Image 1: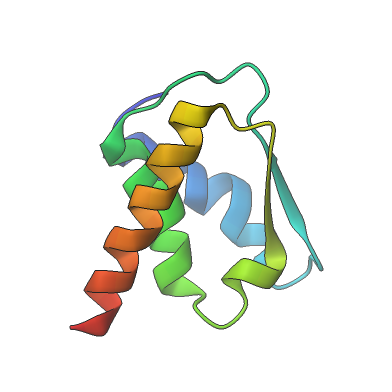
Image 2: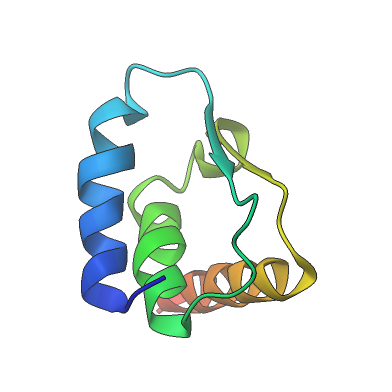
Length: 85
């Protein structure tokens, strides 16, 4: 996967347009074994910041490798710190 610019582009084009309409959005990471920190921070971290009240209820992560899971947890932790300031 790409960098932060691509992460934001993916978020804006593939997830945000459906956020208000969907009850649940499933992100299937099957076949994705790694990604950059900047991509996941821009994609997942920004989603968490944009939608703090329903992020955990609406977004479902599937088939995450241990490395991808670590990156997602890091992005969420970073987003939480940014929201606290």
